[in-house]
Length: 445
Image 1 (cartoon, one colour):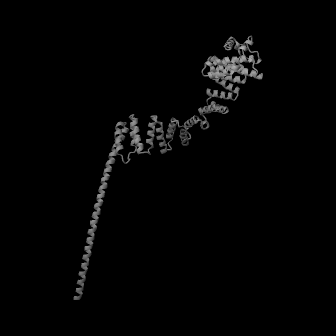
Image 2 (cartoon, one colour):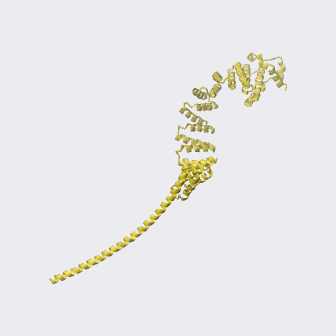
């Protein structure tokens, strides 16, 4: 029993020692862990404190920034533009985080309202430098340059605008206008074509393009553009007139007739279109149709001296010299100084002489010379009308070789008028005292 007790006591002592040692280790480990935990917690608290401090500073900064923006915007809304600029400038100075990128727009608008375009320009230059992607700032700056007639600078800004906003039709139009102003017509044509690609129904742009094509000598493109407008606008009288005139000017009289006829179905009283229609028929040697159109004009304008002269020339081309002379005198009855009336009258006599000479294989006798002299005297009457002076001078120059000479007058001094049958249509009154006085003065020089 004593032996067992001794063994038990020894075991108990050893067990207690082991427990003690384990306890010491556990306690030390817990103490170390707590120390580490406390140290880590202390570092985290420092970081949190620093972040909180920074957050508070940022919040204060943003509140200050927002305050100046709010004050400026309120002034702006209330049209207190001078006060608004002070606050907006504070925003410009403080805003390093681009919280209010539109401040340059509002600041520039304030200066516009204050009639200070130079200040607005200064602001916008700063704005596009800081925000080169802001199309609105480039647009505003371009507008200022355009107003100051600095067209090249304006073009540069609007080119940037359409790069940033390629779908903006208005900006393409403005750029096209600037190109025209800078005489960069090919660039303007490209810009307007871009507009048409985006809005094919813009007829004003089509008309402008047509004019540009004409200005650059691209007549085919101009015609094609106008024809597109004509097809899309069946009631458009103006484009039909323009097309008719283009065809007339280039000598395509049949096409001109088609367009003017279309126009007259829309506006039957368009006298200018009727005149072009008559002229077109006359150019095609359809003189009877031309006369019919001209007489319709006279029904609406009985005193139209030009149309009377046109009728005279058409009758002359038909070989009806009596009617040609009659309408020429009707024209001169309205205006005695009207050069075209005198030219038409002279042409009726000259054409008659040409016809008679032609029947004689080109042989010219005194009868013919007398009639050429009659035409010559009428052409000289047209010299006082500056509008037709050059034409009259050309006709006078052409007739000089076939006029009666001093010798002709002497040899036929008893003849008072042409004897040939083909001149019977000319009244004796044309060869009266006035005629001979002029002839004698000319031949005695």
